[in-house]
Image (tube, rainbow, N blue to C red; front, side, top):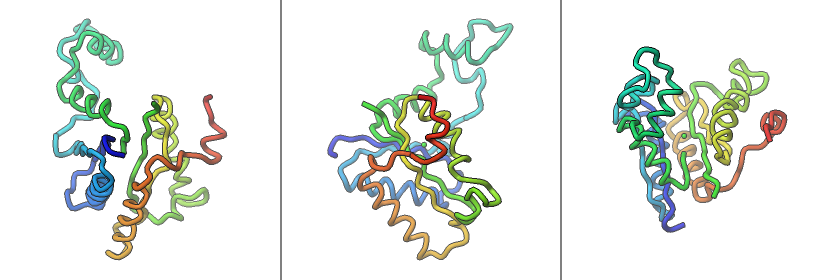
Length: 192
């Protein structure tokens, strides 16, 4: 795996959060396997996720701002804001993105138990909840979507259980290319 590049996109405001611990564990596991790892901590860099005129320099029609049209012009003319260009370069350089056949994997934590994210759970089926991101965004944009890594109820479990979650995450990253998303949600709504 020497020479492979991984990008971990982190979006959590608290440095002591389990999400930061997962990013650190992923970074460590991948580096141990010879990967070059970049962590893009969106809160630390002050990344603005709001779509606005600030995403580009200048507009083609200042009287009537239509974001998608202006973004297309800005992209074609090289007028994207520097923060967007910086993040795009990180994505272009990555072989694995943790948000040929680029692959993407979501890693996330929940405030509730796994049973709360089941088809009969109070929050609904996790596969359905992740559908818009995994299929509607990542797959639509050409990524092969790998099965997500989900750590349930991290706030309420013991430190030992959290350590086991981090260990399982590191073990999974020993072979990150395995495990594409499958199941009823992916097959029933296939756009192919």
